[in-house]
Length: 286
Image (cartoon, rainbow, N blue to C red; front, side, top):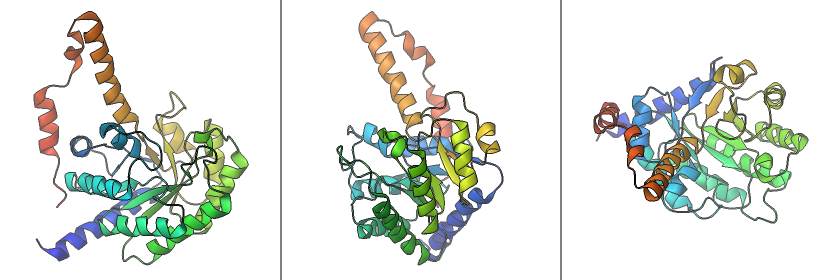
């Protein structure tokens, strides 16, 4: 294998991923949960992919609590997605797999090392009694990650997540202050899942200067790409929604078969040929 070609490939994908965030129009960042779904989404024409920690957890038979997936497992999973696609890939690395800023820095260093174009770090502790890091500590953790990114020889889109709304803390002032703090120390993308409405999202977009990611599939039913783009959103991910959609279809079909004895649910299954066509048409990563 030509190492120079590999390095150039990683750099080119990193540059492409950065450029997607700099456009005036929003782009959709879908989240595959395994190599097969990564290949299918690649073949369907998306411009970049991101892993989903929850989708990976469901497919691995694990829960979604912080700590159930280790750093090594998450890195191996991200490497598998990278190998399945020619597209830039960002990774969902939860809270960075440790409480200390140095832990987060090591996770980001390892993320860049395997060829990812970016990653997401959130401010959740994993402690049900105190689920969100104090703001100062949360900002320090992102600062440590940003320091690693600053030392790289290529772009790496560091996304910082403020998790208040996912944990029953609908404190917009604190959420915005966190996002602004993350921006000030070097985060490239800002992300607050489960914001309650379009007006709140618009306010975030006005009050920060870095690209804002919004997740579809958590609240905001009926929201469209055009509406999000109009208020300033630059990136739209889907989190675990595709995985939950797929698993939900399977569970509902299985229940119907068990309860009625009818195999009618299989009539809506994708055909062998359609799935194989998608997988075969996806380009390899190198």
